[in-house]
Image 1 (cartoon, rainbow, N blue to C red):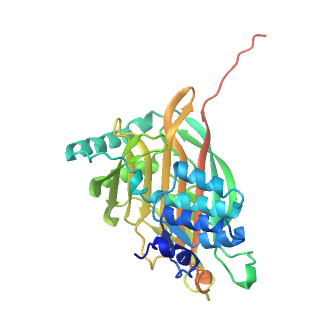
Image 2: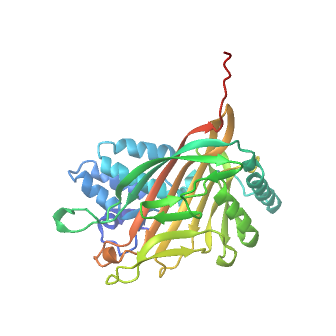
Length: 363
């Protein structure tokens, strides 16, 4: 059943040495079986977390199931942190089949109406947002070995916190204002950063979709329990306006020169659409990069929700996940360490209307 391990050998899969640059993929049930088997053991939190850092979920883990698992692992903070990262990255997968709404797929005409409504929403409704300010809170994680003293003298590329930052962002005249960002997605010296959650990435995807493939995928329940329509899209490189920018990488270990990577690759992903009004519930974007590229993985997902601005309700980003994997010559020279990986967990908070007040006082 490769690359997904069967339930009977899940423990072996989680303990096995994973090939460089690869991750063992397991189901939610297999993850739960592994965690349950560790409840009665004396294996350290660090060792369990280290095993989990080498696996990825093949299904989306969210909602009550994720809340329960994290509660059960509250006494093992490092393990809980790895589960949170696994769950965040699982947003690019479909949930288990038993969680799918049992409704028939809409006919072609209805599907097209939903897609048209989504385009209208992106090109029209988003421009009606008021000028506002918000706070972007970014928790950064990576597996770099710098300043890391591995146990038993063997390096382990375990995902670990790399910092947190808070940054005020502004939305004015229908556009996101953030001068320090470049393109739709980027990774700079301070770590991975993203751009375009406030409509920019939606406009890029839906404009490119006119020259790509958009197809029905499934029904799915969102975080509020409402049923949304999920469409899968594929944009070829020739029609792509999605940017991947990374600085910097080295061609050879012996040559210290670092070079930037800039590309507009083809990409694919999923669009979650409210069938009632075409509003966007979620979008995922995964770049179609080559193994020979310095950057081999570049993906982001944005979750939208209702927020209050100036006493009114609007749909804006509430969370985002960004994942990047790059070739790191020093790390890849070590057996079973693999590529350098960055994961950002982003929250958007404290929405407030942008404006000023004037008070006139008589003499």
